[in-house]
Length: 266
Image 1 (cartoon, rainbow, N blue to C red):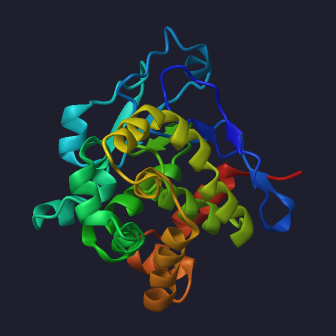
Image 2 (cartoon, one colour):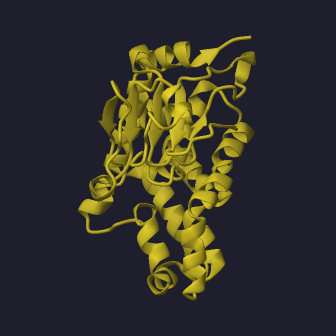
């Protein structure tokens, strides 16, 4: 995919250029994804400054935001969309929101996620992206924002930029008309950048006795994670379009506007 070299933002990518049904592609320079923006510095990072970001959508929990607040580009607008709010309110802090804590304590990570449990844990988290009220409200707000031309260029992110962000990219690319193969390839393409960003923590994790496969399961993405969310969509709504309109509350007319300015034809 279109990785953007940045010295202050991890996993920064442009979704532009992905082929769509009918011969069009996603418009370049308007739809961006990344990891958290707590180190963002446009003055020291020409690649970021050149993007001209107008809107940032932050999918993180309140505790994540408080620990590492976003640095929004000058003139940019911040939209908070806490995907995991319902789970946090019920007393659960999902692994997707505790990556650094888990990597810092191999004993806890192995107790919770070792022995192959990391797969089932993340499958459950991905299903919650489809089923919980806070997730539906967050992704609905994200899509409604994308329908506003004045919001572009828009950058969306969570902490590592892989799970909550990966599902957001899957939703928008699917409704724009990307093939399942293209969506899956884009989703998985984050692995190299995330592993690079978390390499020091993974090394420390293994040096303290943690299993490499547990660490990689925590910081990476796998086809099974995405498949769990897609299966939940099919079971509950029958299609991504119905999930977006009925589950996320996005009007068909809004989807039409979104497609108008996010798609370019040859």
